[in-house]
Length: 323
Image 1 (tube, rainbow, N blue to C red):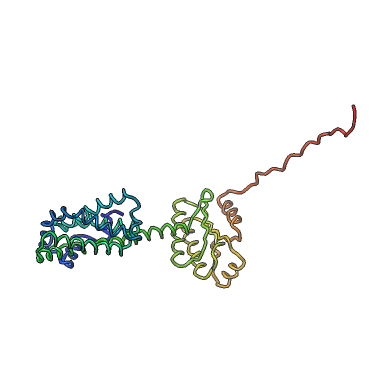
Image 2 (cartoon, rainbow, N blue to C red):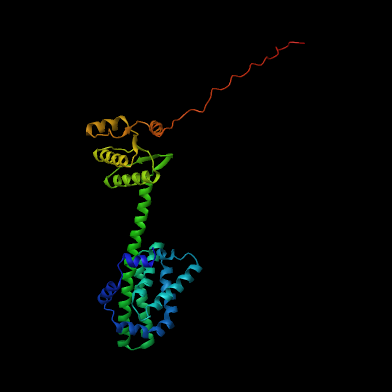
């Protein structure tokens, strides 16, 4: 997702902006003070960035994010622009959207928030020192630092929210990929689908299975769905009930369900549980289920191996026989 998507996800509209500004006590006077400090920032930011990266490059856990000199030069330029942006004298939605890049980038490269927070502690230390060197006026320096603190922590809150949202988004995408792998509906023949189930089936996964099966049956206009449970270690009431419900739903789409991989233990368990699976075809082996599915769509498996032709006998001369 880009910044605009995260703006919507985090509900960063005008009302939220005003709420955050009020909480961080960012007044128009603060923004005007920061804008007046722009020449100061342009004068000292290069030196601040160099010292800032001395800390990052001296620590083994943060040094790994900067593998070569080209990367270091690039991130220093980006960091300089970011620091200068603090002194733009504005805190509107455009500013917020620009600041979201930080949290997105940090999540993408795997930079933990603890390093981000520690780095900004260093930034505040550095800029405070340069302010005192430049102005010598304790009151002016204190006012300037107070305004910088407000906007920096405002930025930190945005980066933290975006980092968390980006992490959740990445996890959801990974979980979606895992779900797709855990319910791989395979097309084995025209109008015949196969779903090999492996592992434990809980209520959440049972719903995923039904969704995947119904979607694929509808998309492919299939007539048969083979569900192989040979890889399911435990078939209990919940598993059996989910299979029955899936079968009923598939039947509403005009397709038949064939359940394969039924062992003697599974058969005994289903009978003991009193689950009615009469609405589906059952087979012990997958190959039998495929043969049945083919017959249901008017196909059959025929052997292509013909008996080998008889070899003609060839007369061999008798050993030592002369002409």
